[in-house]
Length: 314
Image 1 (cartoon, rainbow, N blue to C red):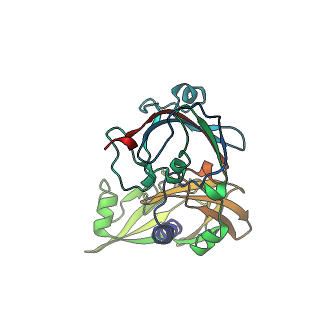
Image 2: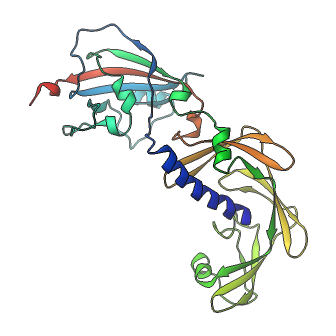
Image 3: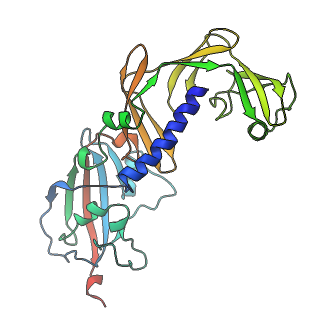
């Protein structure tokens, strides 16, 4: 259980480092490259201060899989349809300065979701389409081994020695286990708790062995050879009981195994890039909203449906 608490403490500390060092990460932090524009249709040209309606299809360049779209029919065809979502063109107020308030019904994406992506629309005309290819280095990034090492998450030991006796603050105990009778010899499932256990039911039991004014001491018991999937990480975990006081948690996984941990500031995505007898080596990505975007070249097909010349209004 020390393993999980230690890892979570590291995650809390390193998440703060991410926020300070990387700053605010936009959902689509895109540098535009390899642009193809369809022939002009003679429509109204997009300028600063205009309101525009834009349809789009987002694909992975590696296999052509569509990951997002504003078209309802395409969403249904590709298993992306969400009933509560409104499928319609993006309502974009084109203001690259981010200093103007958008008209009702439009959003100023220059300072929120798609700043560089929105800039690529400049000069397009109503009715035109544009294809944008974005390499991972300029999109959601790659798997970063150095970043994981810098943040103290470059590797995780495969074996963790765990002490069977736990001293828990009495207030914390009653908060975490409200249905457990606070009395010596009371036996309960401690493993199901997310903090003092692993969030896994039916593996780790505990017996209260001592109670003071401030603390509750429990002894955890587990059957030798018990196995479970470690929550958050998805690692196969085997318990090796050494004696009455100590046991080892042995972790196992596969190369390229990916897991994500949600924090207050976004997601941390990890990938297993190496396994030896003593440790599991990890690479990290902090840029992407989803692990499936990491390392992918993205292709966006954009169609300008309408251009409203609000730039020419007072």
